[in-house]
Image: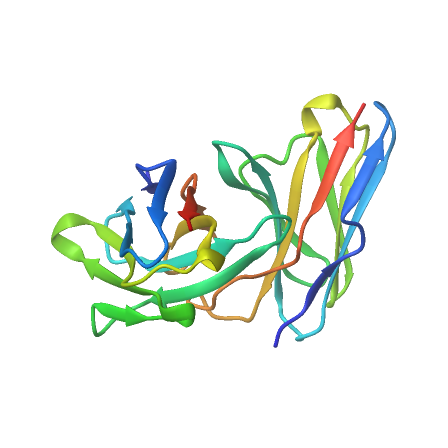
Length: 113
Length: 113
């Protein structure tokens, strides 16, 4: 069965530090991969997506993610975190040929001033 | 930009009431979705609709129904609200194409007392 694992429930970083949020998926082929961000009281906003091609994907707000087939991972990174990045981040997998997306349980990011 | 609007940000209802959650999108998207978001469980799909009057059950449809009479509007109905349906409800839409990302509304936080 398809699944998405975000092993870190909470992460705290200092402003200006680098960030990496982990995402591992289980799927028989290469799925469609997404990262979303949810600010408090808001819906989810798309940060970036991967379907094929270059395995390093650039997104909005200075985020990037790298698809590693051998590790079934799609980790999100940012070189320098800003206080406004404090939010909850969700990794999602879409199975090609279906309407379904599988979401991870989320990682809540706290940024220290 | 795609705009997905959920009619209520907060709702408080009593057990046994019939509850309607409304969602409207302005980008002529064929596909619309209702998710439920609970802490530690991520997003779980309740129902989705791939076209007007067409719907399919998601992973947790029990206790819910949906209506899509017009392309831009997708309603979630709780036939008889129960306390275990207290949750955040997120509506999303997307264009046709399995690699199209979801666009989310800001959510409706429903409390059933």
